[in-house]
Image (cartoon, rainbow, N blue to C red; front, side, top):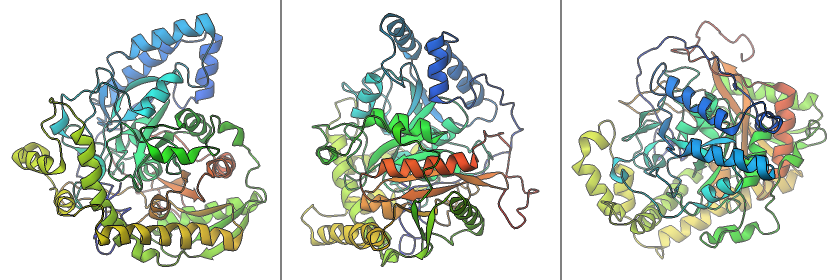
Length: 540
């Protein structure tokens, strides 16, 4: 999730982000033999025998050791998989004996530390309360990655409890992992809650990464780290074995350096799962291969609606990026339908928060109840008490007022809860995305993803000025962000979102935009923003 400046005034897309003051560090050498290599390039290299999965994993682990805890000290990786090289060896042997399983065979991947793995790694959501807790079964996402032949090399840091603990949090801070830094400017926020995945993949710590989102937690850190992020339709990717916030909005999804990589990764994650009833709706919609939608001419004739009211105007620098993107789409043959608005969108943050407070109590409580005796907490009330007893390490900078608010909610039959659920659907989906797209015969809606990354501030929390994630998150609709450019050297993404199950169409449009612009460039680990690079009439 993200973080809001004011719970009453801002959309929830602001709650699940973060901030802190960080000492400057010198620019770091970024030389890396596999830097910016795509999944297809890595797969071709292994197929040709130029290198092995073992060599790939070894190189990425060495880079993590060099840059994550030393050098710029991104603090993006929470834990390394002690079995990563052994898994890579088994994938190399299988390739030699049988050939590759598919595009992810032997590919190193990092996953967020709220995704269960049945191995020697822990799943803690960044909380010291769950240190030492292990799992007997993989999450569905982990199962799918292993079935595809991917090598899970570690887990990434995150905004603790996916940023639903406090409204004054710093995105990317957790009790267990500390503060994640943005590799483009080390004193700027990586955003959250999938901050570690965002910073790690941007810094070439793995080929691809997995984040999770309730509202903004895939697309916002992707935007702030110059990545492609896909927040799928609710039910396309199973949530079983992922520490939850809300069964109404939670999903996992790809965070990658290219649209092609994100499409390849998404196809590996889909599938119906009896442990997550929401995935039943994906029958007839889910695909195993989304790379077939990669079309360099995908903007030609596409009808793109520009949602200006509420979803743009939150940052003049983001607006510069947005206007350049609109001009590019026009040049590539898109039909632009401008100045659209989603009715009652200003109300959405309030009713969404009501739903999330009930869901936090119910859903986190259900996850904790399923943990064994090695966990000291088994419901939200016990977790609140544990945090209070360990305030010095768990809550040195911000508290747990959202947990306390969630604990005070009633049960699932409360009128306040059921009304908020219905109103959320009405605003975001029925009268929102569905109605606007039908009225104007649109293929996608467009907005800027976020403001540029803000200074980290552990004292006062995030200085997030706005973003466009909430409507698609609440509606359960797909949302893709793509690098849109840079201002003062800081990344800004642009967003495409649409009706449920239209991932393919959005990938087609996003890929065509990406290929027309090719904005993505690797980070230089600058100590701060390049304030000398003043945009003059356009973003740089």
